[in-house]
Image 1 (cartoon, rainbow, N blue to C red):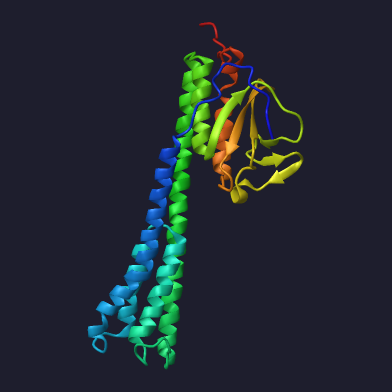
Image 2 (image 1 turned 45 degrees about the vertical axis):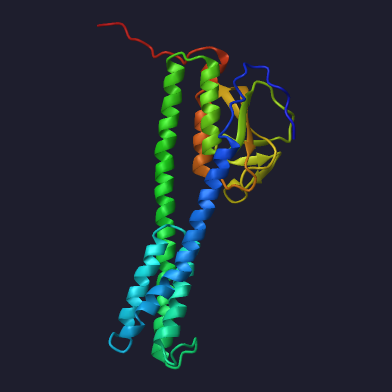
Amino acid sequence: MSSSPSTGPPTGAPKGRPAGSRSVVGIARTHLEAVLVTAAVVGPLAVAAALVPVRGHVQNTNVALVLVVVVVAVAATGRRFAGALAALSASLWFDFFFTSPYLSFTIAHRDGVETTVLLFAVGVVVAELAAWGRRSRAAASQGWQGITRIHAVAEMVAAGEPAETVLRTVADDLRTILLLRDCRFDRRFVGPGTARLERNGEVTVGNLGWSAEHMGLPSGEVDLVVHYRGEPVGRFVLMPTTGQPVSLERRVVAVALADQVGPAVVGRPRSAPTLLPPG
């Protein structure tokens, strides 16, 4: 999908983070995930092996509680997969070292089966709760950041900052909020069928809805139309990162940000409040 060149000021082409910066972030994230997976597998094994000398002196339920602590430590990172993997590892090594016959994944007694299953179940529940907590904290943080960004842009417009500066700032913010590869402003519009980010935060391709929270924004280009006093005055052309999910909260903040730039685009200030005469 292609778009016509912009007829407005050269404000729509601010660049995103350098490719090198993005690659460093990706490498760091991959390294962290590798460390967590290693900890999820090796951590319970190391703790279970260390507790073997006290086998027969400490009840198996207490051993299971110690292993739950290891699972909680891994799950506290908020990575559901790592927490579930730690729960599986803990239950397997508990079975291997602490249920008869020892040093075998066979369980001879019902009590051993129940303890092993409960250990795994508790670990999975803890991992899910930790992941939910992480998502909740992230959503709250994004909400505050969104309000801060909207306020900052509104202040720029109220202060009479040049349109180029306002549009560049909003393009940078949209790139960050919507996880875009790039973003630019264009005063002209393309024909029907273009993918759009609607005012309610929903995404459409022609007349069809698009599940951005699961599939990410449509590939190619997505329009975010800017309105002033009910009339379209331009659009931000969004170039998404393919397959990167974008939550409804992020999309609603993006629409609110775009709404702020209308007065700057048309070169008119927002309506001033009516002043009542004294007396």
